[in-house]
Image 1 (cartoon, rainbow, N blue to C red):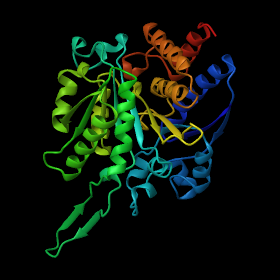
Image 2 (image 1 turned 135 degrees about the horizontal axis):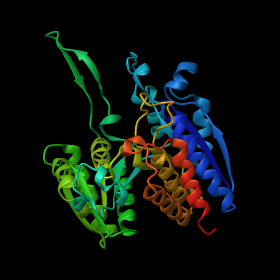
Image 3 (image 1 turned 135 degrees about the vertical axis):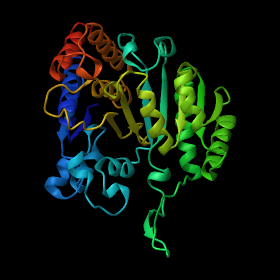
Image 4 (image 1 turned 45 degrees about the vertical axis):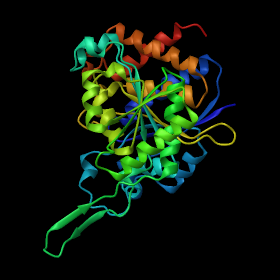
Amino acid sequence: MGRNVLVLPGDGIGPEVTAAGEKVLRFLLTKYGLEATFSHALVGGACYDQTGQFVTDETMALARSADALLFGAEGGPKWDGLELTGPPESRSGLIRLRRELELFANLRPIRPFDTLLSRSTLKPEVIRGVDFIVLRELCGGIYFGMPRGIERKSDGTLRGFDTQEYTEPEIERIARVGFQLANSRRRKLCSVDKANVMESGILWRRVVSRIGAQEFPQIALNHLYVDNAAMQLVRDPRQFDVIVTDNLFGDILSDGAAMITGSLGMLPSASLSAERTDGRRTALYEPVHGSAPDIAGKGIANPLGTILSVGLMLKHSFDRPDLSDILGRAVVATLDAGLLTPDLGGKSGTEEVTDAVIAALGESAP
């Protein structure tokens, strides 16, 4: 059965890297006889400039009917200074997509490449062999909790406030994804919270522990406070298999963990909804890097984070983990051949690296 793919290039280098990802995906689909339909739409600042919205209702309708969304990047200095009010989803196309499509499970694999070990700020002997996933809850927590705002107190000073909030069902569903991921890997799950000072953290730990004991007794579960987890990521990252945590902590920890790979440009991600009754789900795939407006249009953006995100798409939306593995090996071959963009210390351009990945794919057996 064919898949519907919606490409949302966005801002900055987003159009360049999504073009690379789409090119690689189309090549693989043709080579292996798979079917997909592609559509494209504006999102982010590019959409705001034309419509006054960061994503339109029409694009949201396309997204709801899509199996997979390939997202580039959003934002930049041009839109940072806008005086906007309203909930977070009214100020970001990406956040609205996450919220309304219920893309609650964000997967960020952390796996350094041997060729790039020297690019990390950590010692090669610390990061060699690292292979874990940060699973971030994406639709709840302090980014969406109410009440929130900025108000003036009676003494004339300003007060800013946000609400960290999680319900039991929200924690249950992300915990189950974490245990299921761990069960398909090395059967170790680390749950990260701040239960020593936060009520939401107490509930988080209580619910994750219950789900583990009742439904996944075969999984080794441990808990870490987020400050300790941050330290452990740089002290001994090999200890981790799957890390499950909330929206805020996942945002911070996954970006910190990105330096294990040597560059944000190498980090893919997948944001998944719950499975529908037909066994399929809506999913959004994007590189973790930002819009990088300073290098936009120069042809030097690293496309590998997006290409690896396409690998996650092949696994989770096309049900072809074998093709995901083949693509991963093509990326390794490209890096081993010394085709590196400037963020990785090389001089290769976006198109050159993309074409090298496709050439490596062409040499693989169908």
